[in-house]
Amino acid sequence: MFLRGPSLSVRFILFTSMCIALMLLDSRYQQLEKIRSAASTMVYPLRVAANTPYKFSNWFSNSLRTRKDLRQENSQLRLSQQTSQFELQRFQQLEAENHRLRVLLESAQAQELNLQMAEIMRVSLDPGRHHVILNQGAQLGINKGQVVIDAEGLMGQIIRTDLLQSEAVLITDSNHVTPIEVNRNGLRNIAYGNGDDKLLHLPYFAQNSELKEGDLLVTSGLGGRFPVGIPVAKIMKINRDPSKTFLDVYAEPIAALDQSRLVAVVKNDDNFERRKARTKIPTDTNLDTTRTEIAKADTTIAKPIPEETETLNPTNVSH
Amino acid sequence: MYQFSSREINLRIILSVLIALLFTTIPLVDAVNFYRPLFIPLIVLYWAIFHPINFGFGKSLLIGISLEVLQSLLIGQASIGLVCIVFFALNNSRRLQLAAVPQQMLTVLFLLLFFQFTQVWIENILDRPSDYYARGIAALISAILWPGIIYFMRGLILRKKKST
Image (cartoon, rainbow over the protein chains, first blue to last red):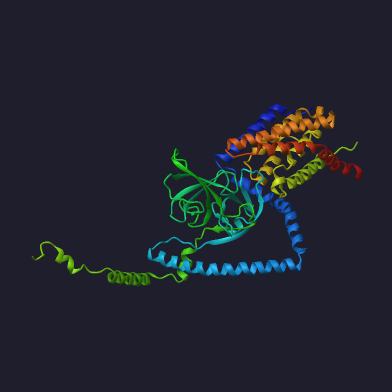
């Protein structure tokens, strides 16, 4: 006796419905994260294997480089390092100044970043979806929502992690939005990705906004996702059409989104308060002393009301 | 004629799918990347046309999910396309087995374009831009590769026959 299952058409309808249900569960309710995470860990060796030819070719081209090339690169790197050192000194000075001002303002905004370096293993094949896979995952404390930067600026944020790898969406992805502010004057706005890795769109600047091409846009920190002040983009083009309510502004991302291979993930820093206590941040007593000094200085600067004012009072004027 | 056990066939399916996934994932320069052949749909079609008894919707769904995980697609997005083309292939497997290779290539082209259409459709529903031109070219390149796929797969299967 032969056993017969459901017909091909019935099975087709069943499996199609299953696929639709999976899509709905994944897109609307995000219920498949655990399954995806487990499956992603399973296919990890495949990703590593796929990445091997690139690594091998890199290693091979490095081993074939001549002594002259290496010397040239070395001298370039030395020059670049010296320049960076000068800049770093300036930044350290600025950071210290910024820190002192923040303490004076009793601001608790922490600007120390706890970074985890990672390497991009894979880039999304679809030109409209700007996603990258990083070779570090939850094992090193990388979690969903953490920010990804490169040496130049903001790249994106982590949207999915599993044990050994994580996935990040870039700021130019068509579904990504970044809260920004203009570094020069603090004008806040939102930068939309539009699927072009060289362009961000800012459609909501008022017509009278003071903007100019080349203005640096940095993260505003609004929404609590991105730390404040990370460079995002530079304004490239401003379309001023008086018939429209808003300016049409385009900016070019600062981070090398299509070139960087080494990136850093900004980890949530729970130990900041502990570190702050260890560093030389002035204590409350010091703060009080500082305040007293400022008050004294204010008193010195604030001149007493001149006696001449009284003499100018019409009632005191003697004729 | 040597009869394969279902375990032997399953091993070959897994091996071919792993190779296809590897070719789908290997990083390429952008200019070539967009036109990368659709290795997974090609392999799935081969098994559905030439081994319909050992290949069905369940395996297509599993292969689809692994592709989605690997390419960070929505779970079910590639699977639904694969299930649709497998349904057509299973329904017409006898006819396609007997058809000449150019006829098979045309049918494969039609099925791959349908697969790409489902992907574009879902991308549009998700409000994601999609490159229609590149997707069409990728389907065309894949259809041209069809004789090569048959040759490779038969080689993979016949290796066992020769050794026995």
